[in-house]
Amino acid sequence: MEFDMIGIDAAIANAFRRVLIAEVPTMAIEKVLIANNTSIVQDEVLSHRLGLIPIRADPRLFEYMSENDQSNEKNTIVFKLHVRCNKGAKRFAVYSDELKWLPQGSEFVKDSGTATSSSNSKPETYTSFSCRQDSLPDFANNPLGPKNLDIIIAKLGPGQEIELEAHAVKGIGKTHAKWSPVGTAWYRMLPEVVLSEHVEDDVAEELKRRCPVNVFDIEDIGNGQNNFLLFQICFLYHQTISLATGDWVLRLQILSGKKRATVARPRACTLCRECIRGGEEWEKRVALHRVRDHFIFTIESTGALPPEVLFTEAVKILEDKCERVITDLP
Image (tube, rainbow, N blue to C red; front, top):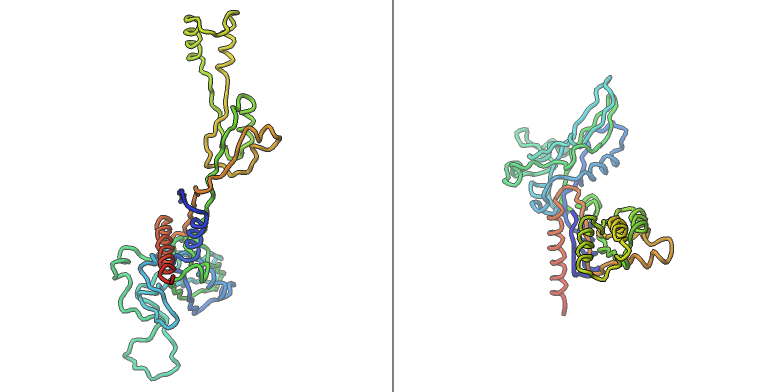
């Protein structure tokens, strides 16, 4: 998403950028319980790859989880991954679409180490959900899962197997990059390209060729039919035009083929200065500037939330920060 921010200081634009990258929360896999992993990918590397998979879940519907909190339906999303490559089969890739959402919570039973528990009691798992997540209105028609289903997690050879549970929690990019909601967020000042003089004919063509992003265009400033009528009217009314020698037809032909360079797409300019390289005469023809209070802002979301929602959340976070500073002032 690209939009303009006009009439603000660069510090404010940079504050929005930093908040988007580091302080807007998302859901990401934090805990991985591995029951079996005989692939060539080590457990730590596998867990790290799972953590970087964007999760399609609205973080505003979940609560932060502290070290003392227990995993429940309000702060944790549980996924299961169980794939096996049979002996004699070909090697294949395991993609993120194999991560299956467990709305009822963890299925792995805790090993208590004692045998005092009753046979009729429900086995203790790694989560304590009071209800199924898919029974909640927010998730009934919106199942949770990876945003992209074609991300390679690992590759399995014959006889190899992966069985694990992945628990996603709410966090911010300041803690770890996996919680950052954007692939990138950046801004640039609006470029201003001005032609200081008329650039025509062969020089105009050369200027257009010089620009690698096609900022300039060529317009035909002569129209044969209109100029012919204009010359006829001027001749009939005896205006002061040098037509005494009858060379007005030749002048008309020259004028009808005249071309002039124009600035057609100034926003595309990267200020690479290619258009003014080659001597002082080019610097006199083209002037390059930046508009100091006009920023072109770009947000590329990882997919958990749309870019417009991310920016709205960033505004709220920055507003809260300002309110806290004002409250703490003596």
